[in-house]
Length: 279
Image (cartoon, rainbow, N blue to C red; front, side):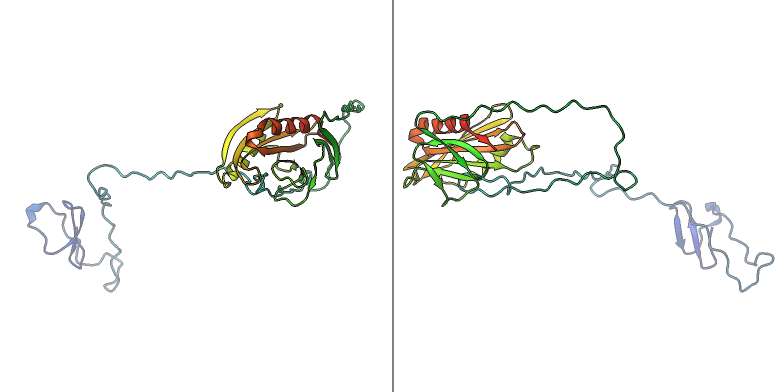
């Protein structure tokens, strides 16, 4: 097939070509008539010729084979609120204080009115917790942050500290301490996860070594670590325990002191844990 401008369809190469047609024995279709179709003027153009078969796409570079669609792999990174979870010993920051979510609206957009439901049993008063007591060598103190705790006798609140919560030390002696603070992170973040983030941030301290992280006391957890400390005359050991109160709140209690006197540090934390009572 060819057009008036000399273009013709080459069935062998499956494309339009320009030039003289091959000999008659090549089997080419006859040329269209040179006169116009009935009812068509001489000045009217011929309708466009139908395109020939679409040639297949060329093979991909590099050899034979089919085209392959690239697969995109999305990588999701789980981010823990590290700024909220501080290395509470020396690099502590206040936790994020997030407000409560608003109650859901009804389907109509207005306030929903609850219908009658089954009667609920009358609330019962919880059994009072036994009064905390301090063992020998410890004194029970009341802190304005909302808790009572036993501290070594003679220790006093310390305000010149870097970190969150309340601190107690022996006056004039910075080798040991007791630190207590409320945890504000969501309960969906486990206690051991919080302590692992704390441990990771504490690695900024020279000579830091994580001794252990273990679950303790139901939903609680305990971190034991050491690092170089001038205040503790070489090495300091810290023991940090997260506890959950009967009301569902979480607190962290941390005792620290010279690594050479780890027994006393453990005893200070145990006395604090046994006596700790939030308001």
